[in-house]
Figure 1 (cartoon, rainbow over the protein chains, first blue to last red):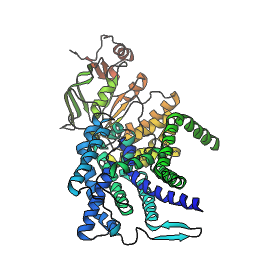
Figure 2: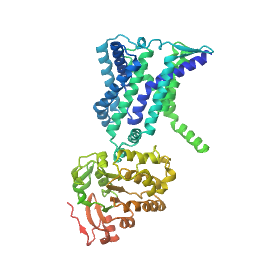
Figure 3: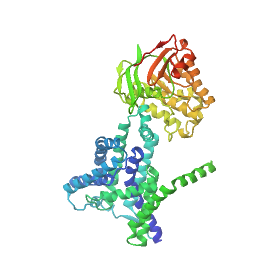
Figure 4: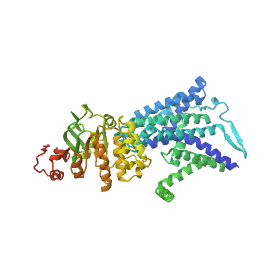
Length: 299
Length: 244
């Protein structure tokens, strides 16, 4: 039963990683931009929520009502001032510019808030440690379960936005062929700016859950970026549902690794990431061929 | 009054001058065909008019408004739509989505999904199919339908028969007849001279980026056009354009 419990804890942890990664995946899927400031931006959102909670004693989830629009606006400005200009100079330049942005954000936070670790856990009453115990000593934490539910809801929301709305169709068209999108009247610049704003909204939510479940400091961002990046690569870059699968695979690997050895938590996650990455590099064509053959046979 | 006036238009591919000193006027409802060999600058001219190729020099006036500096999506909103060479559909979107995305982003008007399906009945059973799963003819019909969904006043058709079987070409041109009845202004680039003569009111011959001759379709013979096509300059009754 220990293994079953670890598996379930892994799935719940995967929900957090999926939540963290969906903005990164969304931006890559739409604009082919790898945002290395993703983790730092989540920490910025966490600090904003912390300021709101500390000053007005507002529950962080209610604080999101104010922080999500602020992050969306930040995303719009970020695209217009940084991403759009750097993307014009080539695919690699946005990686450099977002790397630089991450350094600026981390150090600005350090300058403003110092090195003290903080958490939003004191502002969420007992939600941080409340849980249900199921038969077989399987523990379901309320916050991890809420995190997974929010991750799934966010991914469903993004999926519906892309599949069912006019904005979603414009985003997909611009993602597939920006020149042709312009030919049918789509302002690709505005669509990309809107996509960055949407990604930043998801980052705000991810930052809230990061800060509610653990402590954070100005330099927490890069660690969060690594987890998000691994989830995106495992699940398939740009695929929203793949991000959920990638997050869960990473979470389960870490959870199982921790059960095997105390040091195994991070190592197991990184090993799974590397194995999937190498498999994608070397066997991607073969795997696609197998799936295509299966699909043809089933059809 | 002219719907489109082009004055001294130039466009380049790097150091190469692809379109040189083009002066052209097109009246509302006119159907103009651009003919010329590969590399004559026909496609570059259409792409420049649509706004996805930069103008090096000159002026484009559409419906009395200078649109030279406008981007492609702004020109689409003004009423110019291009059916690009090679179709350029959004492959991971369905036929319906390809049509709807143009509807939501383009101008308002009479063209709807239903009217496009009426014009291109071959798309009806494929409405929910991915664009990448269509045959060449169905893809071309979708590309034309998508352009129509922006409700253009000027439709630019670039090589609509390219790479299609004769049957598929026939189906596309049969469907285009509905479009021709609406008197939408059209600039057509087509390699098939017979179809060009069937569709166009006026024919413009291009050679090495410049206009070398133009005339009413009824006044030009197939042989004359073929002469210009291959770079000869046969004596003719049509207006010959002197280029620098």
